[in-house]
Length: 412
Ligand SMILES: [Fe+2]
Image (cartoon, rainbow, N blue to C red):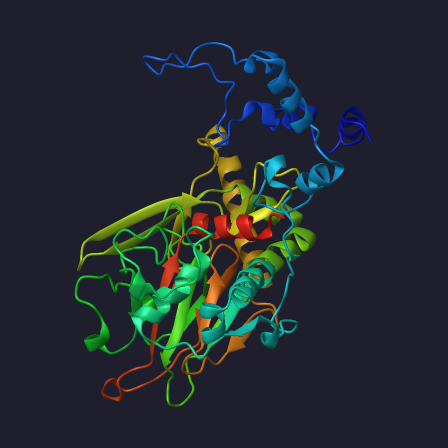
């Protein structure tokens, strides 16, 4: 099929203007645009962009750019599909991720997402399986994980940083110059959640309900960050002796899908209403705030993809009505009524029987959670201080770095 026929057939799904923007003629070997006119001395941007026939000075390169512009049907199909994270340049072939499988507590097969620490940290194939698991389910359970900080660090290397670095232990890396590994946050690079103060660092923040014995409602972490972490990696170091304090997880993509189907108006409210989130720790001196919608939709994909969830009832501060209706008491009242209704329906979906999965993590069990998709929580536990407390070690990794690994792994 000719290029023009390809384009004509896909005109409805992929606008020609968008395809033209992807034309390889516009990009250099570093995938940076070549059609933007810039003053050589000052760096000021100059008027109109260069046209394709002005980009190349000889006929040979023009011929090359013309050939490179031959988008294959496979490529156009790929960018038409409903996956949220990639528009691969044509010369890097196409992005072919595994399917995204929505799950509930009743349908999730834990064996399907379980891998072994030794294997994933030494075998490239198992490391790839861990990344695929996370893309498909948003969860990956790594068994037999040593509960040392270096083990958590090594595990984090699987999910972040450049994809062409061979597997190697953190002991061979300079953690200060490394371009991969744990995300450094107010909780440190690696962290521990425990009821035992002797295991908690003195300079990292602990003003969080995760450091108590209470139950924790389902939530995503760090909603008060402008860019919340991509992964939460947490490893059970010491389970509660009475097996209390079980972990809970929920598929946010599945939940948003049900909300959209059952209550489309409420789905629209939660994808468009911007809430504020806040974290304050007066003891160590932190005051973090960020804003975002509970349901975040990717504005650059052809279909409406839910890209991420930002949900924590305990950190959410509030929202304001759209500027256009402020001052109009009737409309403002109606706005808040709809928001309240949407939040109640969202709770209804989250609390639906069988929707969350409850997991009693054993010593060495490390659950890796895609924080943009899956919520996590915890049932209450009740241990005496002298028992040393139930403790977990873990870390966060960056969302952008994780998506980079996915793009590199799934582009073939
Ligand atoms: Fe959390």
